[in-house]
Length: 313
Image 1 (cartoon, helix red, strand yellow):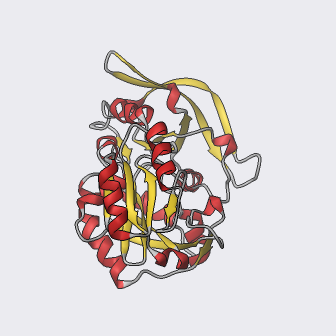
Image 2 (cartoon, helix red, strand yellow):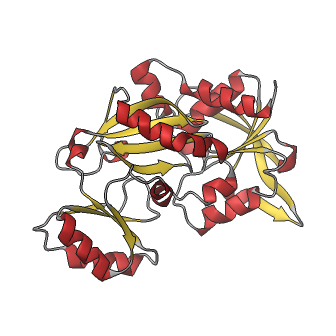
């Protein structure tokens, strides 16, 4: 099976080839004989119902600084592709949402990974709230009185923006913290959306686990342990990747959400689990392939492409 694959992502020239999951997907697609194209989200257009992109042929290799060879610009009619990988990084803002609307025009003819309508309807911190009993106590609100009452009940809490990513804008508020009111004022000044308030989970000191699901099935995980004095475990803010195995509770979480992911065309998903609780379901541009590959001696990119090709068959 030789496929035409368009990759919608940020500039490939600046990626870290030792951490980027899209790079691994591109390497595996190329190894399978698929034809690759790369384009930026801003080069996506909708013209009288046709979806086009100013794209370039792409070849990849694991050579730092020379990892991407791009051909001349050509205009692609995206309905002629077999697969479109929607892999630009968040934030999940109106530009991102608009891109899902545009790609939805071709999603009945082309396999878009992940399905654009489902991505639009599954913002990461809200999507998890549809699965009762899996999350820690959580409030999504702009109502100051509700936020104050939640803090009074749970004492030690986390504040985070609803559509933030990568650990940005996340604050722990202890019962003694005198900056609580100032934080609420800052959130109100910078965000129009409600904020997410969760009970602080001390288990985060042992790590925040990223679990990858492919077509609804868990295929591996990595424990991200926060640096000393840091409440966030994200690798790019100093977290350390540690080898791990999935617990029974984590497998139960995957079993609870997996059928919905598969049904909605969310083929490549990364969930975050702290202790016994699901905190996020990442469907936009999940990462973790390379860290899990190195720690477990696996090749998760093959699992993703097996699932894509199975869907096409």
